[in-house]
Image 1 (cartoon, rainbow over the protein chains, first blue to last red):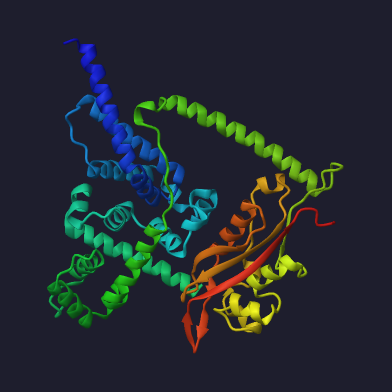
Image 2 (cartoon, each protein chain N blue to C red; image 1 turned 60 degrees about the horizontal axis):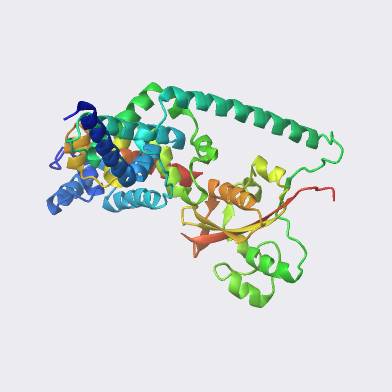
Length: 175
Length: 258
């Protein structure tokens, strides 16, 4: 069989499968990443990067099974490297992020603001543990597989994330 | 430690409880540890406290409405094109903003003849009751005394008279400062926006609804944004903080001199 013909067929299949992944996961991943980095534009860029990697991987190996877990792992790694590179972003006050129109009016509940403030104070690994379990719906075991750690470590990170959120809630009540 | 588990294990148990993965023996171990460790009781909180905190996470998750639409991966332009477009867009935005800024500065200084439109926010202004406005005042319910039958309908959650203001922004009415976008100036927007903000027992705004629209969605949105950004003193019933509703109105006038 002609090599170019095979390659074109692979491309079409990869594209179709990547489109399926985009349809199913784009909203979930973008919301997860927006919470991780606190910025909608950056979240969109990172989401796009995740799907691009998935597409390249499928084009190279059409038989490869890419699950939601793979996408979340890639998204988490992307967010963590972004936050490490741009530590200064964590020092920006939250209100400025919210003022930029990243969050719609009806999303801007006190709970949402409290959660984002708490996430902004946490190391990215703890944010990821809380969001993968409570936001994305993975169990501590599954989240541990995605983060390359143990279930107990995930539970401990969730506990610490919860403590940060409690502190933010208390501060809100005292203001 | 005489409580069976150490504090690190207690953290793990708290996480297990938070994720709804705890067995009955996990719960017992956690309770026993808290009973003998006041520091963990303060730092980690009891089971109810964990539930309360996780409810906030769930509430934030349920409030998410963002649904971005990405292009299919193969349709993405190369990164260098995207960067070039970003630069072009940024330059265009700077040009537009500097032009808009100049126009605004001219308007504020009364510089250009015939361009005397400056949008100001007049806080808590309620227009005189025409047939239409009676309804809006009843909905606002805080700045004037509406008729008794209207009050019964519109102020069901609050007592009459000055006690209507039992839910107040911390810092007073002036704490809510809407910032309408520049487009509102360009559209010469005008009108009164009346809002109702649902405030929980902790003084946090839960939801902002437009009771009366100014007719301009950008003005309405700017008021709700501002109202959701402040904290409130919660309503109190018999000394207990309960949920309440804060009502307020903002009048925007372009041409304040007229």
